Image (spheres, rainbow, N blue to C red):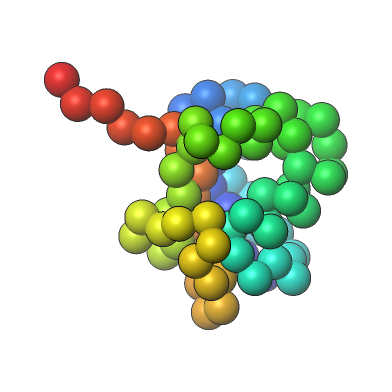
Length: 82
């Protein structure tokens, strides 16, 4: 079981700020594939991975970073400074 957090427009498209997910995914990319297969709202939120960033246990990660032992995965758009 892993806690999945959604921020900004990802949260708006999915309609949830967070959820606990039972997964067999080994990487964030595999987790996205599992979630996208659930419903159209997930597929819409994850349609363009280049427009998203991922963090594992509050550390920025790559899409192929192993999820083994992770408690939390967060998806959010890139942050911009100003």
